[in-house]
Amino acid sequence: MKVIITFLLLLSFNLAKSQKDSTLFGDWVLTKLEINSTILTPDSGKYKVKITDKEFGYVLDINWCSVRDWKTIKNEIVADPSFPCTKICCDDEKSIFYENLNYTGKYHFLNNNTVLIIENTRGIFYLKRSNWSNPDL
Image (tube, rainbow, N blue to C red; front, side):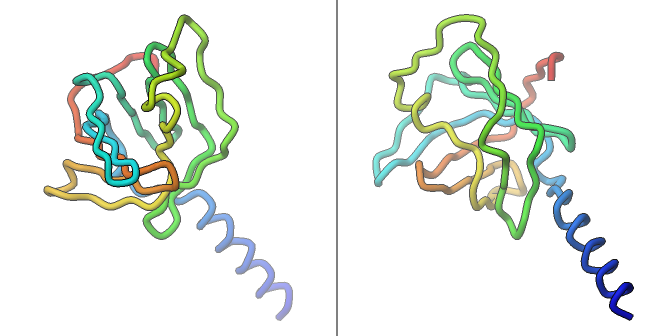
């Protein structure tokens, strides 16, 4: 009996570990960032996010970051904080967007899942579904 209970617990842990909300899958563009009641609007289409079942990637200014170990738990995006980013050129590391980009945290959708809102300690991120595509992701 203990073996069966242990097996079921391990199985449920592994299933929970790998779950991902497929509603998140697709291409997104950051439309605004709210930090301490201040609303910041990035240049149009500059900060892009692509989410698939295998990874999510996002653009800084020029370089891409790729998060492969991610999951969703109770409407929260959880990811390993150490993830690789390309170093092609010169991102604006002093930009308030660069300093605060973090697409993990509690999330919900608006407007028939066309707007994604992610809230974490760095701010509230508003993303809109997009049609852009990057063949490298």
